[in-house]
View 1 (cartoon, rainbow, N blue to C red):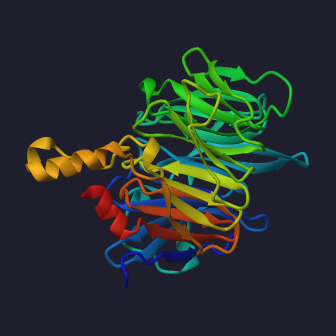
View 2 (view 1 turned 90 degrees about the vertical axis):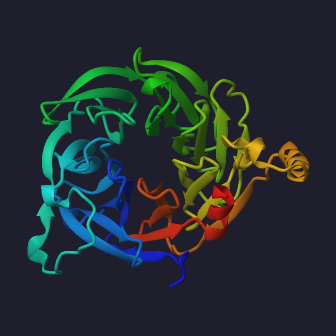
Amino acid sequence: MEDDAPVIYGLEFQARALTPQTAETDAIRFLVGTQSLRYDNQIHIIDFDDENNIINKNVLLHQVGEIWHISASPADKGVLATCYNKTSDSKVMTCAAVWRMPKELESGSHESPDDSSSNTQTLELLCHLDNTAHGNMACVMWEPMGDGKKIISLADNNVLLWDLQESSAKAVLSSSAALEGKGQLKFTSGRWSPHHNCTQIATANDTTVRGWDTRSMRQIYCIENAHGQLVRDLDFNPNKQYYLASCGDDCKVKFWDTRNVTEPVKTLEEHSHWVWNVRYNHSHDQLILTGSSDSRVILSNMVSISSEPFGHMVDDDELSDQEDQHQEEKIKEPLQDSVIATYEEHEDSVYAVEWSSADPWLFASLSYDGRLVINRVPRALKYHILL
């Protein structure tokens, strides 16, 4: 089987929530949450065996409602948070909770259980993030590289910082801030920056992107009209502390330097419908993944605004005189940005794209019809970046 061929898995349920198992850095593993109105919702633990190019799955029951968002603890393989719908007094609320999976499923494995339905296990509820006073939960973010004790949730127009105590059995609200002003004051998404000692987050509401300091809970920058329509998603460059990517319903992906937000540094216009997701590769920040309602996943090489705009730096001592001259000529020109590949394995809106936390060359995408596709960065490009 060709190395670059995609591997496809059908969940048999509609789904829009996807996360890598962040704390698992050895095995390739993703968690998917379903959106079913009729059946118990589930979390599918997807283990990818890259030697044999096969997917193994385990299913956990998530008995509280359809899952809108899922995020995994950076410190504990067994812990995750979900945002889900709950109907009470004929009103639908989106709530959030922290869960633990059964011990034996915490680590990546290459075994799928037998297909008897009796062995579907249930998630253990650790705690609710109580949002009765704050409105509908849009997403939950874990402190990057943290000990898994700090999380931020976005609920309607509130930013809520929680401390998880007593082995995550209790969530204590430690500080909060509210969005004020006119227009649609409802958060759609947010990301916690891995830079600045993890004291900054970015949020999206309506067409605006805002930065916040988590210590003072004050705004530190504001990009009004970042997109012509709703902003759907954000991500921070893992290597360049001021760089932020955003995407939205204007079909665009934009890259910002948060020190000067009057204009985007770069704009990508490759999708023909709403862009739901944008993700920087954790190791090679020129690699950008986007997923859209046009059913396509696009992998772009945004090398001009990456941490290595001139490509792989070569140590001068390794070069002969002739090579030296050639190298100098080469270095003057930054490499060109380009679309590396467009993936068309989906037939429905792609609501989520995520890089593996274990293999920097591998990513997953999820469309609403419950199709999960695992793809690799084309081999030729991988070697071009590495060599």
